[in-house]
Length: 120
Image (tube, rainbow, N blue to C red):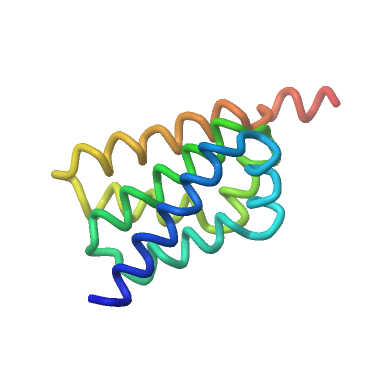
C-alpha cells in the first residue's frame, strides 16, 4: 500500500541519516522523539516485515552511536515494546530476529545497572 511505502522509506531515511551523521545526528534524532516516530511506523504496519526490519535497524543505528540516554529513550519512547512485538510477529524473518535481538542486547549493555545506580 501507499501508506506502507511511506513508512518503509521514512524509517529507511532515518536509518541512513544516523549511519551518515554519527553520534551528533543520533542525539538530535533521539531528542526530537525519533524513536517514537520509528515505533509509530512499526505499530502502524505490524504485519509488514520490511517496516519492522527497517525500524529495528534504525534503532540499532541510534543505539550504536549512543549512550545510556539513547537506551533510555528506546524504553521511554516505545522502542522495546515494538521490538518485542516484531520478534513475536515475525519468527521466520532472520532479519527481524537479528535486528530485534541487537536492539535488546545493545540497549541492555548501555543501560546503567541497578548496582551502578545505587552506588551513584
